[in-house]
Length: 369
Image 1 (cartoon, rainbow, N blue to C red):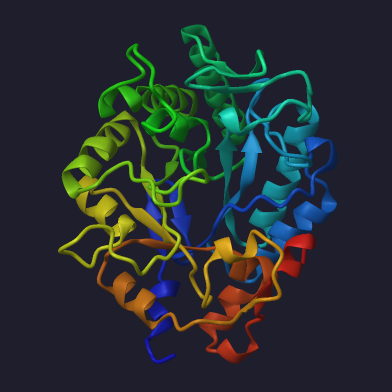
Image 2 (image 1 turned 60 degrees about the vertical axis):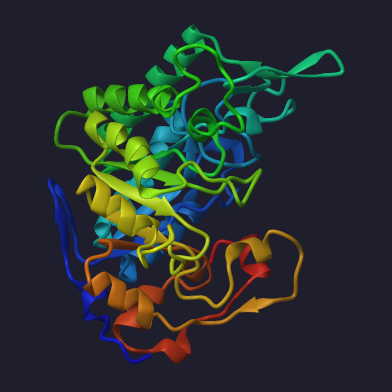
């Protein structure tokens, strides 16, 4: 690698959020929290990344206090005394190691299946009802349900601030609940929460406003969004810059401070006629700081590892990433799988020890290193 890595290690400031560098640990579900409470192994997992130079850690998705918020086994909650006490240990450990940390607040929506913890009888919730063999498998959300979820996001944000987190991230990406309202493929409501892009974004706007009221005017709110969905990797919320502006501007005006722009490959242009990636466009349109993400530091994308495979992802050249960062295309860089397998990734990049960076394989997902 030939590009100068110093731009990646410049400090970043936005209001009270003061970061020592531009490296963000991307949120990644790990399923190592039995009883939905983070344990000492999880505390150590995050502490190691902070100690080894990550500027901001965004936690794995942690589900809010709503009956249908969780969709997976052994993922952590962010409500209730035990869960919050567990997260307080993580926050304290990360701060002691010199890092900053934000929880990713999560509601999975209609991805949830009957039988999922903590209450197996609760179906998924989503914009639209879904029946199978005459049984409700997805509950179509009423306006009262929407109000309840908005309140649960606000409470999770309030609690996160109270136990010492430095910011919060709202998970509005990848086909989970907030994104299900955004996307026409999952939202065909005929009320004020469906139809136009403004209506489909109303749910997110209400969440952001409620969270802003809960945490106050200065506490940083990060919002993660994506074009692609788990159900459809080719899906697009916005087909051109004008549509992206119509999508993002209301979110920024509601109170988002930083946009976390999820791409499968950060180097791909988002629209024809420009080399800007999704984060570059978000920054240009809103004037807000943007986080880029998508196969940073590795030579293959994460989807190849969602199924059993012997493939190994090797360290990739980050010269293009550094040039884009130096050109102010985006402000922060989120690193995912490379940090799962190698806690010291940031320090190794800073020191030019690229040959020492560990390769990623599917086996890394089975342990907390």
